[in-house]
Amino acid sequence: MAQPIYLDYNGTTPHAPEVIEAMRPFLEHEFGNPSSNHWYGIAPKRAVAKARKQVASLLKCDPEEIIFTSGGTESNNHAIKGTAMGQKGKGNHIITCAIEHPAVLEVCRALSPYGFETTSLPVDRQGIVDPDDIKKALRPGTILISIMHSNNEVGTLQPVAEIAAIAREHGITMHTDAAQSVGKVDLDVGALGVDLLSIAGHKLYAPKGIGALYIRDSVHLEKFCHGAGQERGLRAGTENVLEIVGLGAACEIAEQRLEEGIAHMRSLRDRLHQGLAERLGESVMLNGHPEKRLPNTLSLSFKGLEANRMLEEIGLDVAASPGAACHSDTVEISHVLEAMDVPLDWAKGTLRFTVGRMTTAEQIDRAVTVISSAAGKLQG
Image 1 (cartoon, rainbow, N blue to C red):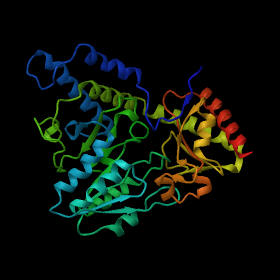
Image 2: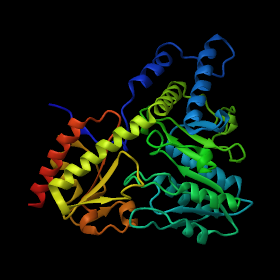
Image 3: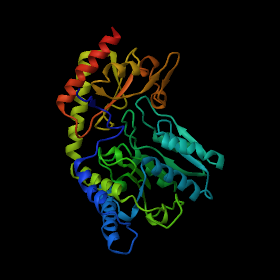
Image 4: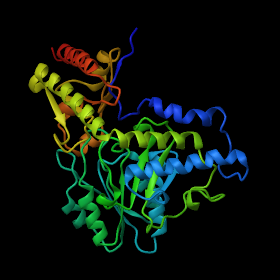
């Protein structure tokens, strides 16, 4: 039986063939510790340095401003906890927004017992934070603003540069979770004006379990892990050379093929949306901003349907993600759709379709047929 068409690239991505090839020597024979002073440590040490340059090149920063982590969640934890603990003498207030990933929201909640307070700002119907709300939320003790670059569910892009300018004007550290944005849109940390930026490798065709954190050279963070002093002394532990190499290769590919990739993904995303809209008409609705969103992300609500029933119908043919979980007596709407005030009869039938580098037009056309047929059957 043929495998389902994969339309869940925001969930995770396949390994790029070039990434696998770059990693192969460090899986097969280059096993040395990069901290070793003998011959076996030379190639791993050079490989880590090369990968750091590759990541930095994609973000347009200095290699010394990149540290490697275990993924986007750790990067967010380090950025938020590291800032909070490093600046607790200055204040105790953090600003974020209601549609952040749990890797931000839960970290902020975990800081509450230590005396930190978090303001979670609302978003509009399209999932965008109003910079004026940022200004209104500022306090003398505000030490950190953490607003995601793009939303993982609906793809909405936030006005990060404008918010970062507000932070900079008031001497506040600015962090953005860019796990979903890297490799899909152009990211220039200088132009954005952010102090901290999180990356997750498995969102851009690198392995799971590897990520990076951009730390502007003027920013002080508390150590995340104590030990022998790797990663500028901020994250101790022998480097995960194999996957660091994979992340570096993935970032180099993303930089080289960025414009081509954007055009490819946007074309297929819109082909899927147009095909479903033509067949289903007003019974399907787009979530998120129609323009200011990731080129690969399509969040659609099917009126009056349940997301899990839709997935049951299409599961053998199309792999996608739900925006709601419907049980016998309850409906659990995602916190993102809830914050965007999507009406319940629409929200409970929400699916996220995300295309990627390997998606083809033929797959999209097949997906249109499968999804529209399932929706028609269930709505009928």
